[in-house]
Length: 465
Image 1 (cartoon, helix red, strand yellow):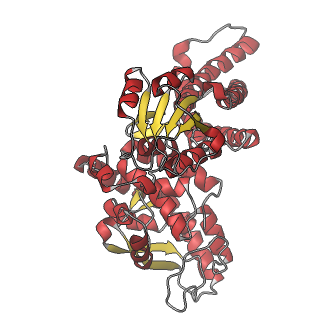
Image 2 (spheres, rainbow, N blue to C red):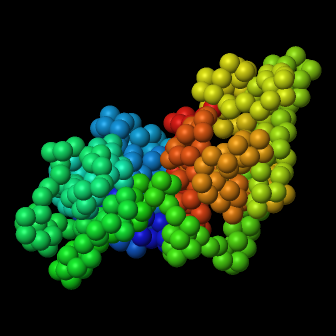
Image 3 (tube, rainbow, N blue to C red):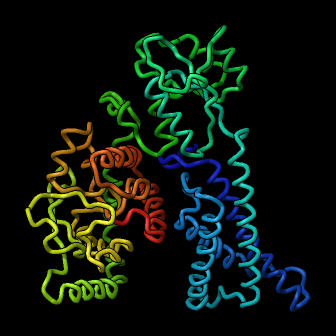
């Protein structure tokens, strides 16, 4: 993993992005060159004639592929899913490039030359991704880890390795003191026969993760220091887990971690830029989405037989714990909470109307929240705002829950795209771990990443409820 503007990004996926961008640029040139060779019998076109068009083509396709989730760390759902997303990306790219050629004729490329470019680009991207699949599944290229600890923290790392192919292999676990109850498979536990440095050298260890549940008991300071002097990276459980999973592990979080950790602060200049961004984009989106919002309002009105309310207003908890009224298109029956008691929204909730189900799947029901963004109650990116009743309950049961109110709530957010559905206390706890990661590592770059990834979340219907 590498850290770019405070956000952890997979080195392999960044490398893939760069390789595919170079290929897309080259495809534009070779597509034009092949066209000239076939039609005009010229070997190569002047570079300065195609460089601007090639850059536009590369940027557009790269952005669309990013928006389709092709550079997410936990994306891989198999080759068929990858091929489908690449295909959809190129189809969208065709429409966008056609529109650009219409608006900017100077960038125009003949139909046959552009067709050759797209074919070369598509085949190359698929081949690059098949190679990436093969290399990423080869454990020999993974980062080799040794874990100090066999308790609850170590078990979480074992689970992380088993569930997600994220570029590391744990060679084994070492029980530092006998009081720590083993929670990892016995066959995965190693014995230090001489010293830790020699064992790490024998196993060609790249990194040692200190995952003891209680480091005050028998921490081998001198041996770990010797490994660090040998060039082996030493990481704490919290740091490693955050880096690899994109969330902060609540079970291991202490107040001192928050005080001394890098992050958890948003500079005034960033807040000003974020607010300016919210104002500009929300105004633009309202203008573009107004016809769709009018159709949605008409559909809700017709479904309720011209009697029920079109908009749904509800009190939510916002920045610094202040309540505000969120606005959405009504997607449930009018009597969804007829007894007045707040109820978690469930997957396939029976209270959702047929029109409401479509709006939830496509996130159209959330478009009126653009007015909340304009008013300053919300931002585009941030933790999902919850109802005061739920906040009061969850704050008593989940540590650090109120920290999610350190920033404005958002229409979309890191938790929404990484853990898209939440309908219980356990789900709220999981989403809080992602929210804390966002608050700790906030930047405008991170907001841009989240907005791009939201496109594919909506497009593939993930997390709508």
